Amino acid sequence: METRTVAAEFIGTLLLVFFAVGSAVLAADYIGALGIALAFGFTLVALIYALGPISGSHLNPAVTLGFLVEGRIMLRTAIEYWIAQLLGAIVGAALLLLLAKQVPGLKTSGAFGTNGYAYRSAVHISTGGAFLAEIVLTFLLVFVWLAVTHKVAVVGFGALPIGFSLAAIQLIGIPLTGASVNPARSIGPAIFAGGGALSQLWLFIVAPLIGGILAGFAHQITQPRGAPVLVADERAVPGHRTGDLTQPGESDRPEGPGGRARQG
Image (cartoon, rainbow, N blue to C red; front, top):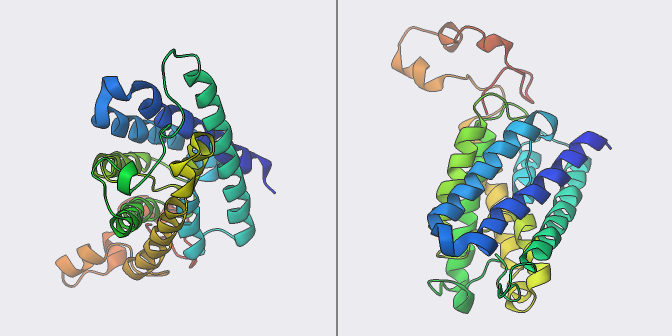
């Protein structure tokens, strides 16, 4: 086990739950859905810049599953990440609960930043609708994540499109289900909220994992191992090989699983 990568996933998921979910628990009346969405996006961007070079800063079992489907990480590594993410989410939710208890009159049972459908949804979305929404929203997040990384680490400006996509997902998903797209993020707060949050938790574990799997397979189709990097440029400029259009320094990029430099 690589201690520092597991520690990075634990700490990162803890902070994601504490700050991002905390924005919904502690400040929803002041910042609204837009503020919560930005809190999720900004927190993720910051954590990716801080931890991305160490572990990839997945902080999400669905993201890790997408990388596993693509063959970028080994099963053992994925299991270590999942354990760290779940423990981090639980500890982060526990710290958030401790803080929330210090706010007079703040209700923590039942809601506590958890996800839900039917009577627990702002728009009373059906079970099937919630399941579909979580699959599609998670698909977007994981697909973007896979597209902007070479292997596992997120480097350069790769954190920005990932954070932007999570913020957009939150804007769409908050009225529907509270926007999970992350089983760990859902499990941690649900343990302390109890009631309906726990009885509906299954959906926010299964659907995001399906979305992560589908994103992994879809990315293999759009960017298979060993495929040319600049397919669109090659088609747009007849007579030029893809290699001729490579930008300066691009040949120095990390090699993908297929042994050839690749994007995504």
